Image 1 (cartoon, chains in turn orange, brown):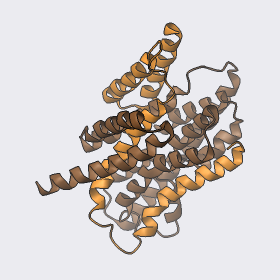
Image 2: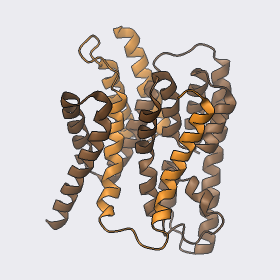
Image 3: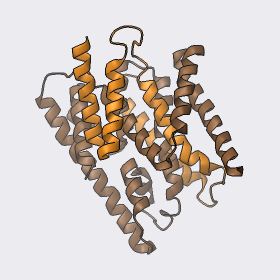
Length: 105
Length: 210
C-alpha cells in the first residue's frame, strides 16, 4: 500500500461510506430497536480495542517493559478527564512518552 | 474552533512523516476524519499490509455510522445539502449538532450546514499551518507516532464518559489479553471486536429485562 494517492482514495471512500451507511439503510424506515444498545456500547469498545491494538508493537518483556507507553496512556486519560481538551491531552501524553523513551532507553 | 489546534498537530506530524503539505491538506479535505488521517500516517511508518489497513480503517470509522443513526431525523429536512452534511459528520460536529436544540426545520438545516462548513474550514486551515510549520522544522521527532494511540485514548475516554460505563473497557481489555494468548496477533483485533460486541449485546439484553 505505497501509492499515496491510492491510499488517499481508499481511505476517503471508507470514511464516507461509514458515514453514508445509516442514511442508505434507513432512508424510509426507522432503525430496529436492537440497534440501540449496539449504538451506545460499540463505539467505546472499538476505540479501546484500537488503543490496545496500537500498543501491539511494544516489547513488554524487555526493559523498559512498556513503561513509557503505559505512562503516556495514563497521562492522556488523566489530562483529558481534567480539561477535556483533545489537543492538550494528546500533546502531554505524547511528550511524556517521548521523554520517558529517551530517559529509560 | 477546537479543530484548529488539532489540525495543526495533524499537519505537523504529516510533514514530519515526510508528506508534502498539499497531501496533508488533501487528506483533511477529502478524508476529513482525524483518527483515520493519523492512522494513514502511522500506516506508512508501520509498513502495514493493504488488507489489515482497510480492516482497521473500517473499524475506526464504524463510530461514524452510529453517529449517523442519531442524526437521521435531524438531517431529514435538508435537501441538496444532505450529502455534504453526511460527509462532514465528525466527532466534534456530531457533539455540537446533538447538543443544539433548534426546532424549526428550515433554519435548522442552515445552522447545521454552517457549523459543518466552519468545522471543516478550521480543520483544513489548521492542517495547512501545521504542515508548513512541520516542513520548516527539519528534525524528525522520534516517538511522535504515539500521538495516534493518544488520539484513540481521547476518543475512547469521551465515548466512555458519554455512556458512563467501564464495561466496554473491561471487555476490550479482557478479549485483547485472552486473544493474544490463544491467537496470532494479526487476528486479535477482528476476533476481539466480534467477541466483545457479542458479549456486550448479551449484557445489554440482560440488563434490559432486569
